Image 1 (cartoon, one colour):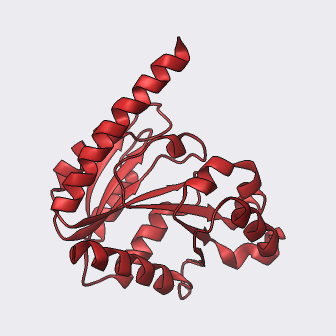
Image 2 (cartoon, rainbow, N blue to C red):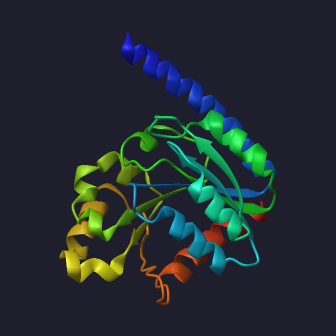
Length: 219
């Protein structure tokens, strides 16, 4: 019985996800589903990328179990934001994404959907996004692609954050990339966003997203 209920839930979500896809397309929005574990640097990543894309409007749909800290932080940077609190749920679904999108009410923009910090549940739910961006941080360990295959295989692009800590934690980038390539050919960007130092790798990721946005905007 539980399997049937889950199947029905996913089918209902997929229907709404398709509606979201049409909504984003009609407004020339590149929707980016940003996933990753708690502390992987998702909010910092959005902030850094937004600074690189100054001539493109950026919006954020923030997903958290509780609080509005990240949405408020984005607003102070001039990024239009909406907050979704899941009250215990470990992921966002397509239904709440439409509500968040209606709240920020944007056109001709890149909209980041910052999913709940989790390396399991978000991979099961299509939100109607164009790009699935996975933030994996160096302190989490170089074995994550081997342990969380569904999430890494689900991603369209991977951002490896906190690369300035590689040596400190003994992170083996070759081992990490071997695990990633076993399940995905998603491009990998290595980032360092340490406060007080020049961000590294952000310009390249921003250029990747800019190209994807231009394809949407010109459609």
